[in-house]
Structures are given as structure tokens and as C-alpha cells.
Length: 59
Image (tube, rainbow, N blue to C red; front, side):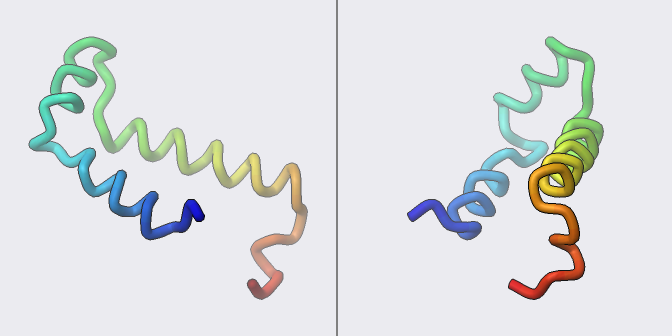
């Protein structure tokens, strides 16, 4: 099962000190914060598109 804990563990490895991120920032000229902001807005749009009213519904 691919739970949120796995996702959190994965994102935790993508810290500022991570060499992969540093090379990523150098290559694309984008910061981690910008990347996450973009991803977050996209994920919210995605969820809104496929299941409208997900914010108000209780899980």
C-alpha cells in the first residue's frame, strides 16, 4: 500500500542538503520552494477537476 507516510518519507529525503536537489536547482534554475508551490497548485487543480467538492467532504 502506497500511503501518505511513504510520500512524506520520500519528500523528507528531498531536503536542501540533498545533492540531487542542488544539481536540480543548478540545471533548471528553479528552487525547491518554487517546485513545491507549482506541484501543490497542480495537485489541487487535479483533485478539484476529478472530484469537485473534495475540500468540503470528510475523509
